[in-house]
Image (cartoon, rainbow, N blue to C red; front, side, top):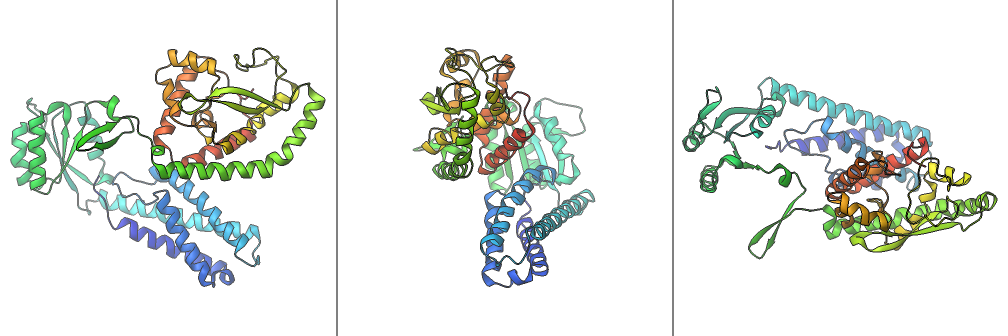
Length: 449
């Protein structure tokens, strides 16, 4: 998509001014420190860059950016309150600081809405420069592209299409060879080529023309199944190779970020939650049923390697514990176990697995070895989820696919969400999943039994 290069610097400057003005007016004593000025501005730059808060694609709008708004306000909020906790002299009460931060969030949101409204009005009225676009070749994707081009707020001017099959359509401009001169004579800026309708030589010729006339050429693939995957192009010497199962976690820095997050988060849970919760559960368990405090079970992890997965014991001792999933009204579950499972407290010892590096806080849930052997034969792409470390929670779980697998669609959709998570991973996605996991645990989940 054509980009608006002034959006990022202008938006950034405007947001920085808003934050500085509000903080200076409402927290003047704290904000007079030179270090504070650098801290608030620099951290805003780092956080917005980290979550890619300032995209410039023409199709980007407020609704497509809601998730980034949520992540920005969450992460920058941590930065904001941390500064007042450790860097200030505590003259401002937490309730007052909360109102100050909510005002910042409100003003930034309103200004962003105003920006999108003004930009859309500007484009709708035809005041902005439109991107002149043509399509070479007609297939099923043409109508989908037309919907984009015909949306006034995106700023395109659709000129028409070329195809070797004649048509009475008013937007039909001629055969493919006619497009060569048309692109020159009509100041076309972007050329979209339907790969299914063009030969290799025609694509090469269009690429040559575009390169020699300063036009942008884009190829629309004909294999939706192939190109809807997360892919990357890798060079083996001079040979380009498509990696059809690309994941952000294949990058070393991404693995480091995720591992550091896992270590910090699991350590905090172990120190501040499990340190007092474990003795409490042990005492309650002694009154409830016989057996050990912890239950461990061999499960498949990354690359199908096995590991012992820890839980607080929630069932009576049984020979079927390694082969049978818990079901609704399962007679094996103890009274205390029902509470532990309903609130997901039974899963908390898995933070020791995370600290050991066998699991991650977020990832595909590990299954019993017997179930892995069963599902890999009956569920397409099931083993793809084993490219990642298993997690205590995951995208599939917050979408409702947790616990007992009643129907085939349960495991199929679970695998679908696990693969989506693998291909779209980001640290903000992990934080979002953790947030919804905690919220669901507080509310109580229907399938938590």
